[in-house]
Image 1 (cartoon, helix red, strand yellow):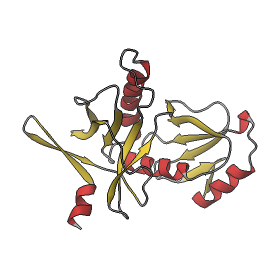
Image 2 (cartoon, one colour):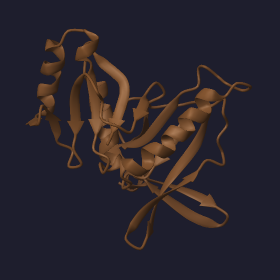
Image 3 (cartoon, helix red, strand yellow):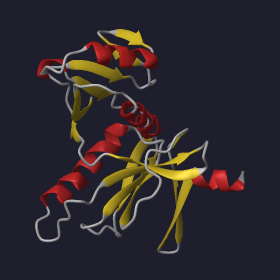
Image 4 (cartoon, one colour):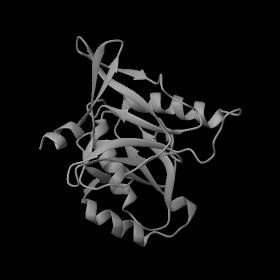
Length: 206
């Protein structure tokens, strides 16, 4: 139990201070091991009634796999813009670029009791509502809306299977800007379990 509790947060010792990141958790492992990586930390901060982010990327090496350790309490409206900046930096690198290097979010697998990772290298984030496609919207309470109706997660696969691979029928996965990052990671893991054509590599936050 002590080992499991340690999985739920990461400790970073910086300049004599102990920093804590509360990790998202799930019940399965997408990727268990990542070699040759650099850690990036995004901390949860509070200033009065305001929630803030603080990014620590002192250990980043552009040619390595990047592991984003992000506090699950942060709303994605604060997290995703910071992730986008770092993605852009890595994609635009010329001198030391490594095409094989990936980006991952870290989380705790509470069933198998190990640290795990979900890849997002090929995801392009947009901070607007999509103009076309079939919108699948995850609310801040983590319900799923399609055509203004709440649907169950097990129903989503059926919708996906019935759609053609036509470009206009692409599923556009959208997330409420106030969704906690911990819930967002759980949603990403769920999306990876879906099969079928028409899943976009873009994600929308608004």
